[in-house]
Amino acid sequence: MFQYFHNPHGIVPELGYPMYFFAIIGVWKVLGAIAILVPGFPRLKEWAYAGIFFDLTGAAASCALVGGYGAYGFHVLAPLIICGILVASWALRPNSRKIGVLFPAKVGKAA
Image 1 (cartoon, one colour):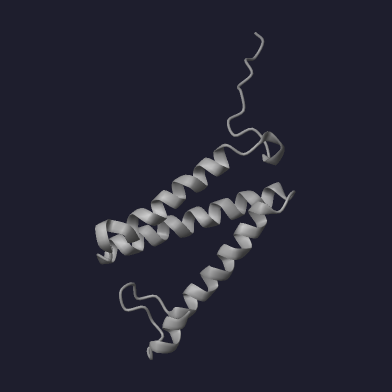
Image 2: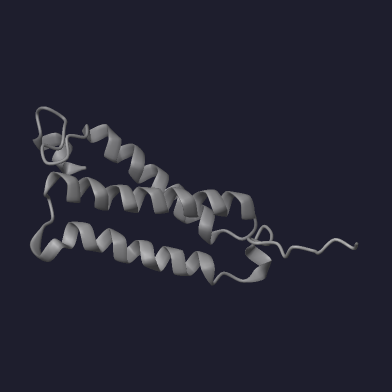
């Protein structure tokens, strides 16, 4: 947020995104984290997991495509590692927090 006040053009030169984009994404991240942590609302949790997944993979791809890898590829690897933790959290959640069966079993037809 402090970069916004030091940057007269209001854009991130490395990525080309306007600064207000990061404010919007930041608010969505906080709301997504709250949605995941608050009990109930399984459909909202699914959307929050999906949104955070898209945000993290988009961040890694943006940094990779403009060559902003950082030291040892940190700007690409860090979001992908957090994304792996997010996917594990989603996959290992208890049945009480799942909407339904991901791959329903096929029932054979009687001839």
